[in-house]
Length: 228
Ligand code: CA
Image 1 (spheres, rainbow, N blue to C red):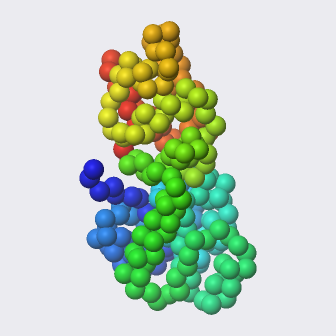
Image 2: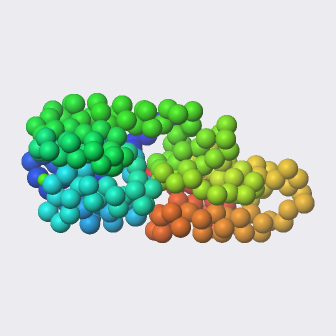
Image 3: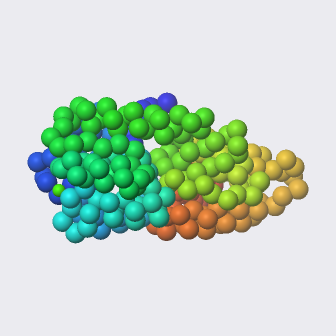
């Protein structure tokens, strides 16, 4: 399997720091997105899967703490705070904001990328399989699928359908293949049953991320799961 480029959202208003960070992340095989305000960062999180957020505490429009709180409502990915003052560190620890780590400025870009890698390893190492598609965690032992940090309530057939798509992101599955994957007795189900289940799956995913639309329709062919 080719290496997966995970998206890291960098929220930092100082361009010199942001440039250093994004360059280091890119060199390390990540896809960085840079935003300078909390509002813009939250918009990105509503629109696309992000593996991790590097979040400056002192932003021009709102504090990193408030951004973090808002993020948690969206099913937040792991967070590394960037702090300029030790009082901010006390706050991170004291408020139990769910931050996964923090770095005090100035820090080395290598230190940051090392932390990013460590957190992603930890986040994904809890007995769950990280799908090659960003934003998904499939806990096969518990038959649970998490999208953008939020567990999805699935019926048995929906679960099996989604698990099949997740097993091979980007691959186009026709209806027969999906039927065979999700139903014990495929012959008994009608073709449009797959379509009906895809429709309810999409509605559930829309509740989590209204604009992400991770299931792709290939007209006359079938469905695939978006790779990024
Ligand atoms: Ca700042």
